Length: 128
Image (tube, rainbow, N blue to C red):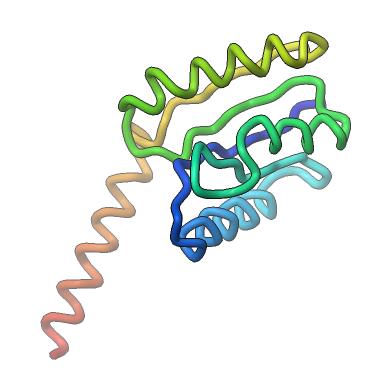
């Protein structure tokens, strides 16, 4: 069984962490019934990637897909995430695979989201 760990930066502002959890819950509603999904955080939020993967494994996951909740490939995805993945593989050698997807940058829906945000601001500006 594959578990999905959505990996976000995390914040000392708990409402920001909860916003990530809300998106992950909405994502879970769009996935097949029974799909194991956890919101995980680099820092400032709980659970950590390690803790979230352990929860997924407790649910029966033997393969992990990490989906970065980051806009672009920066320092955290180039340095921190690979180190965490290496640690996961060493700590849990019985995992059959750990895969990391691309970040959000480059996804066609991103331009649509930005256009929608701009359009809503223009509509508010015109209405005022």
